[in-house]
Length: 276
Image (tube, rainbow, N blue to C red):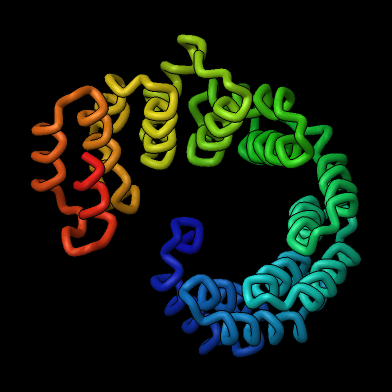
């Protein structure tokens, strides 16, 4: 779906066409609301999601969307009421319980947050790892374990998926973040090979950032081979420039920075250039 590719603006006309055919199509209202909220129109997005819920109050994902948008607007009490409604519709709604835990953390209610994360985790205990849904559930389980401070368990789940070479964009950034937190800078050849074979730019950039953090700057350029700044929100060239500079190749760092398509009028460009 276009939304899943972060092309929220591009998806809106498709939802508009659906609503022209059927103005009461609750899913199109919900989906358009999510898109509008993700393109900066929080109030409009919120209102559209509310309209969808008036037509179909049994859609847990719409309650989650309403809660997320309310939270982004700082309306935490309203966000909690909305997610509680979604959980009432589906008591096994792991994403709903996770979001409720995040809300509890945001307002300083840590014990309640932990209960929410544990409840979400319990709904993911029995999963099959040989399906897309199963792999996504294992990654979700790892995310929840990390939230609960169970980092070794989280690491095992993330590694199990990373080794399959699938769903790297969901798995690899979490995996490397946990490894850094635990101070586990080494990785097996099998895991390294799997990550280096990834064609997903988000996974490759996360790997390059990990290499920078652990001082393996000589591998950064190879990790980013074929990845463009357009694919990774301008993060590629700065990483390569920093890697070159860290090895004493200041001239090479400046050359690649000056010849790149990075916004040279932006504050970040000049800060980076000054650092180099």
